[in-house]
Length: 177
Image 1 (cartoon, rainbow, N blue to C red):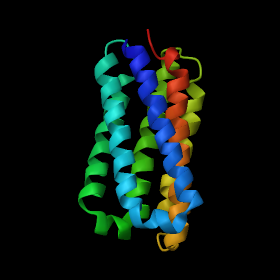
Image 2: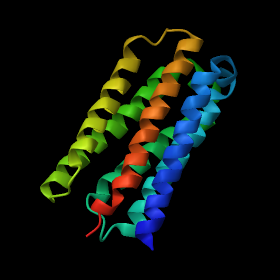
Image 3: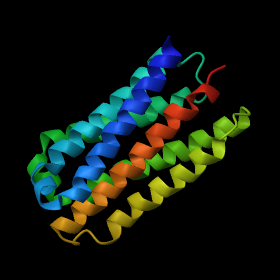
Image 4: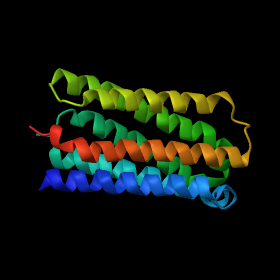
């Protein structure tokens, strides 16, 4: 049961993140007004999914500790975003970059644990972790890119994060003992 639940939750989170990313790309002006709220909700949901997956499969899911770490950090950042929306609008590239860096680093570290345990496909998580961490770092380099540019970046970042969750869901059968 927990294998199917985990897979469904990861795929659902991936789809929601992809949809949020497409909305940001399709309508940057409209997305800007609700961006911090949408970002906070998407981050909160993805953090909760990671913690639920950890709780349901911590004894049989390979590398489950990294899901817990990623989930806790994501929830903490999402609460900051949701409780400080005016501040988040001003610091969006930094907050979003921080989330991507945390997620990328945890996925990168988790991939080597998966490799050590002999899980096929671990390289996809290494690559995704590197991409997420680099994109997060790049968001720190030029925070004054303008409101439209930020929504486009956030759209792309959400799509990358959505792809990462979809990969988790599609390759999750390889994580279970």
